Length: 296
Image (tube, rainbow, N blue to C red; front, side, top):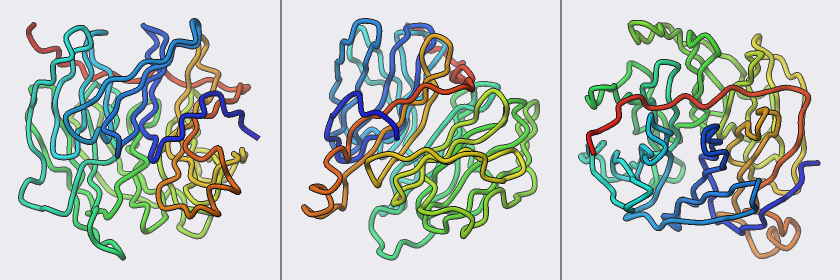
């Protein structure tokens, strides 16, 4: 069972990342439009309010800047000044969608997908996109999604993993790390192969994929052939995103949420919305960075 080390009570904690340079953990509570940071070496936790919901983000070549995936588009955030610099709107013509999951590929381009926040049941309205290093936005030739999630890349960059949580399967596309061409799409984990819905994912140094299982209170490690390798339980039914961190990248961190839970559900799982961690016998990879650094 994973240990809760910050009982934050987030409605929707997400997008946890470890910065290997500053040695701090970063994550967001999406509905609160807040970026959080925790330094394990000092125990210091700080936060920054964002101008709108912060759905995902990426490290950049500068330790003073993040690439933000805000609900309506992309921007840069400068820690030292608190300044948010808009880059581009995304799907402004589709009122129902907002940004959701995102991660840099191995060459430092930011790949992300959208979330249909209106329909119930949700229809697959949103696309998958890539912000290239010259700040051009490119729509990828992938199926539309209702809840884009699980975006991550194999160690060699030749597989792009992704999912539509509403459909439950985890897929991967052939991905050319040099040309950035997106190829054929394959099923990695079938919809009925594991409990819950796939939310965030990350890949370890051995090429295994770690998937948080929304609704099942689990993190599952899948082998490169899609077979279940191990299962870790959490005392919260809605884990949302995993990341490897710590000095040796051997600590698994996981965000969680209580969004949509009844009072009874929350009483039975009072740590929902906390951050969890567990030391492991495998290591992760340093988080890929968005390599365009804007002029000061």
